[in-house]
Image (tube, rainbow, N blue to C red; front, side):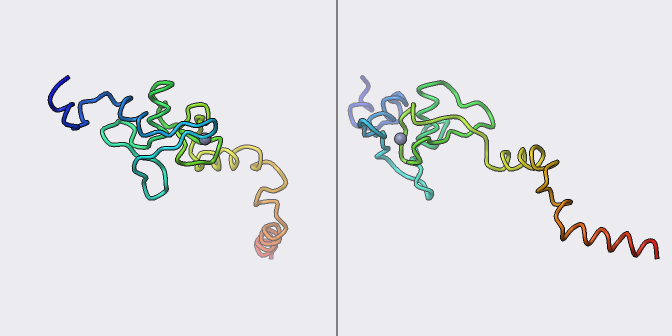
Length: 129
Ligand SMILES: [Zn+2]
C-alpha cells in the first residue's frame, strides 16, 4: 500500500472499492450515500460514468451500451442495486417511436382529427372556387 492510500487520498483506489463503500445495502434498495446531483441522482468522481447508478451498472454488468440509459425499476434515484436497474432508451426516442409507429396510422393521428379535416375541407373548397 502506498503512502497516498494510507493517508486517505482516494484517487488511486479501485473505483469499485470507492463506489461500493458509499452504498447502504438493504433487503430493498441499495441507496447511494455519496454526493447527489441536482436531480438527486448519485454522482461519483473519477469514474467514466459520473452517475452512481450508471457506474453501478458498469461495475456489475459491464459498460453501458452507447445511447442507452440506465433506469430504475424502483423509481428510487438514489438506488444503485444492480437488479433494480435496467437499460432503456431516452424518452425522446420513445416518443419518436410512438409517433412513427402505432399512432401514425391510427385514428388518433393529427390528420384524422375533426378540426384538421375541417381545415383541409375549407382549403380544398377555396381551391375549387
Ligand atoms: Zn431500488
